[in-house]
Amino acid sequence: MTIRGLTMNDERNPWLDISRPISGIHVRKHDDHKTGDIFWGKDGDNTKMLIISLDGDQRDIYNKSIIHIKGLKTDLRPYEEAGRQCLVLFLESATNSDIFFDFCCALTSAIKTTENSYGVVIATFQHIRRWKNFLSGGRSLLTPQQVRGLIGELLFLRQMIQAGYSVGKSLESWIGPNGGNQDFVVGDTAVEIKTLFGRERGKIRISSEDQLETIQSKLFLKIFRLIEVDKDAASFSLNSLIMDLRLQISLADDEAVFDMKLNSLSYSPLPFYNFPNFKCPEQLIYLVTDNFPRLVRSTLPAGVFNVLYDISLESIDSFTFDDETLCKE
Image (cartoon, rainbow, N blue to C red; front, side, top):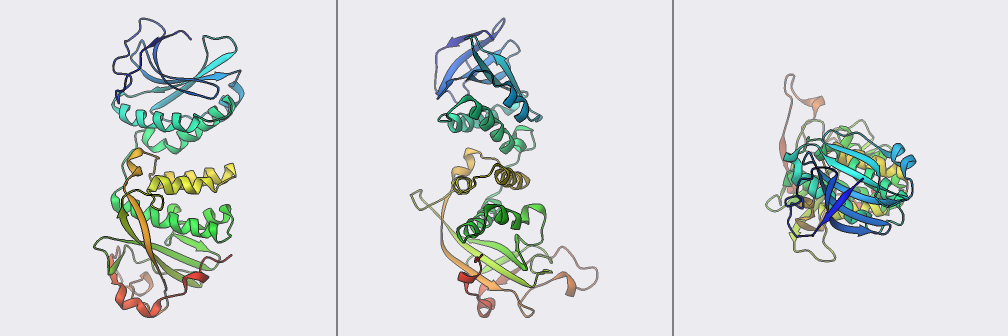
């Protein structure tokens, strides 16, 4: 592949002043990684590219790892230096340049310290899977309420792992992303997760007649109270919480399941989710029994459905449960 280098600038759109070549590809160096260089590029069709140079022949791992996603193409080509190749990522639609730029920045940051080119190829396709929704054009940002709801579920997932459950079992119990009526089912116990924020101090919102009814022998309602804070060592954002969980996942199969569940919730690792930052100063848990104040499908009048209602925390004080015994393996 023939490339011609240009000077670097600090534009958010790094392809803006890369001239359109008559042949080959024009590039601008972006960064480097342990085994090569990384370039922004543009070809004769004005296609935006990210180009990652690699050591040796990585065709085998490339063919094993490749996935096909609408909106993004990849290729493995000979590099201009003997014994090297380059992994090329192409953007199909110019209207998605901002998403492609964010993806490229996240990817290049992740591979910068990868020890070898084999690992660079693997890491690249892992990132493509995580960004699948956005790169394929089916993108929509999570609302602030959805962000806080996901944070609550992730906090409980982390608690399970810290309490001694295996990562695999913890992920298997997280059934909310699969359409479960509750967020977690652990053995014969179901757990519904809620978060409180801002003015939601004295009540919680129940979004269906199935949320507080289960076939399991026990059902708990777990509440995380979140406050928005300036970033410090003890605070967390959605992205940093997910990264913390990734550090506790050692098996590739578990990581694939984690990514699949996040993807089903329309999460992609966008810089947008680096903010806001939160702390969780309080956690509450309640045992949901027959006399717990709730509306459930089995007792609703015929023809009533799609129920949405609020429960005051004051009204359920007597159902408070010892949190310490919930996440015990």
